[in-house]
Length: 221
Image (cartoon, rainbow, N blue to C red):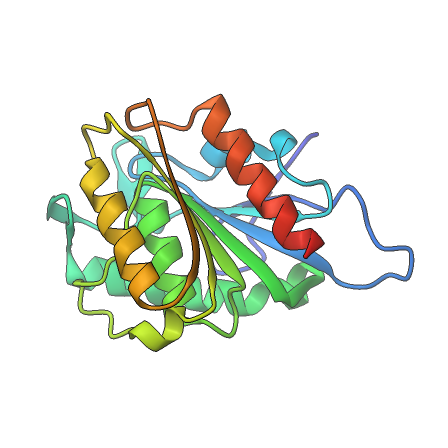
């Protein structure tokens, strides 16, 4: 499916409208894709054919240039995001998420976030900072930034839906970050599913299939 760059909202993004729509013209569920460090909005949109056709999928570009790609925040080491750039991206995503329902007919009660690496960190942050606007989040090869000073609480995660996937051999964001995030969300009484895969810092066919199945089950629930 041909997709064109969109600039109607505050972040440049790609759009794949829902391929299957309700006959009564009701609002559709949405999925916001957030790419990893050094990539761009085209990166995760390459997965759209494996995702539920009922979803309107939007893939956003991070605001900070990094080499030929973009980043959501700067960092000195893994697990320690730069506070100023992290908060700036949070503000941009807050505005972007608020604009999605009106721009693309997305049901505000059925918006999911899916991120890889830095995008997974941002997906977790937005799910916990805007719990009323995000139904659930899929975090692949990332972590919950619980110690980044963003000010969210355990209560924000209670009952929220999360799918966490991590490679056992990840040498960029070690699997311990995924395990710690799983424990954090469990302690917060989130509805969380966690799986590890025999891969490094990447998305595999198996992990893509599993997260797609999880997301479809969420839509069917």
